[in-house]
Length: 102
Image 1 (cartoon, rainbow, N blue to C red):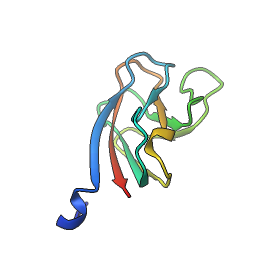
Image 2 (tube, rainbow, N blue to C red):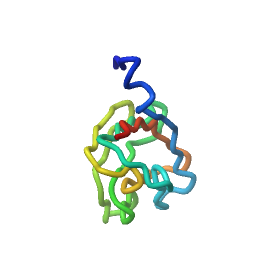
Image 3 (cartoon, helix red, strand yellow):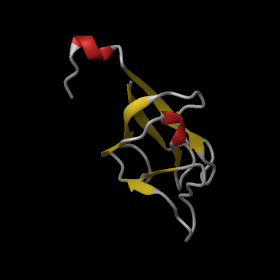
Image 4 (cartoon, rainbow, N blue to C red):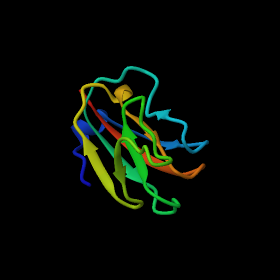
């Protein structure tokens, strides 16, 4: 991905780890106005990452949210990055997050 120097200050990144499978993790607890959020499931994960709202669930038959296969990226167009949560079917799986701030 190419980022122009003038916009680089508006892009922030972090890693988010699901410590306990089935327990939702907020991408950021701080309200973060944005245009988009890119989530990449780590290639070393056991399975994909599931992204959704605070009720996201990656375990059992009641999976809710959007699954991102390990090693792939999805872009979410939201107004606030704190609206997105992740979960994973395996404890310790993680994702990289880029936030395109307003």
